[in-house]
Image (tube, rainbow, N blue to C red):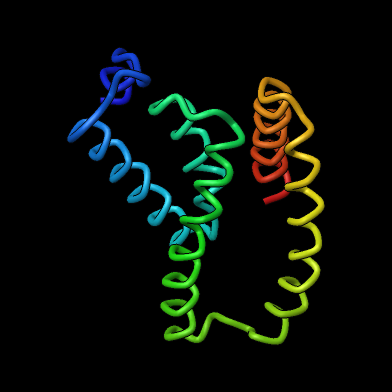
Length: 134
């Protein structure tokens, strides 16, 4: 199914086909967010780039905006299962705001092709580390 979806020029998609791809991307991001705590960067950004021809900057910004909704729903659901340590979440979240401000500023200065390569490298290293250490 994925191969069939990539044969159409994503820049030409409009209407229902585009909405279907956005719904699939959102569903996959939500599923992975609930299962693994990832979804935006690991799922949504690559699919927006490949399936809908978003630029790296636009895909990142769109993903971050959508993550607000996804993360809220996931956090509330995990809270209902007793899986949230609010104190530690604040200790992680507050410095993360500074990191995201710095990262966003830096990202605007980096060419899209470089962003794609660095992102792919981070994904590969993360996968290897999870296999080796996890």
